[in-house]
Image (tube, rainbow, N blue to C red; front, side, top):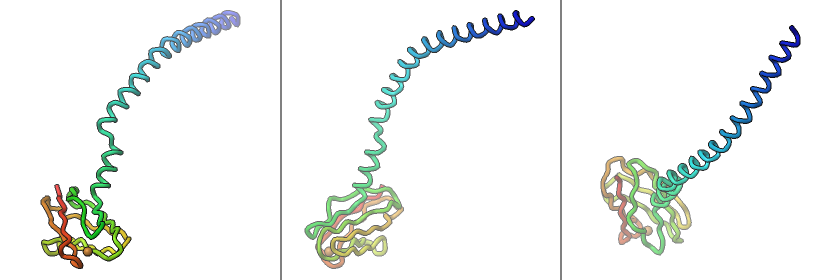
Length: 141
Ligand SMILES: [Cu+2]
């Protein structure tokens, strides 16, 4: 009885080893290929989407940089987005909506500030209350 049990156990082990070897051999090569393909597919799938690039671009786009007494190009933000203001001049400026009360942020020279974009899509011209000739546009869409 014990010998039979040993034989059964031994053959079971042999079968297990055989299965494991065959499985790992076949699975290893095919899995490796699939893994490589999957990785390539994932990379190529992520590249066009480029979530980090998008967020970086969005972060850049959501910053109004004031330099040489001027606002930069119009920036586009999502409704209600946080808009950063970087004042690279030495004097205080404001980002004040032409339409009263939409936003009005004052930023000292060499400082940064933020404000919340309007929630209604549209174009929001703004100016600096200290230098009314400074004008810019915030686009919400
Ligand atoms: Cu100003």
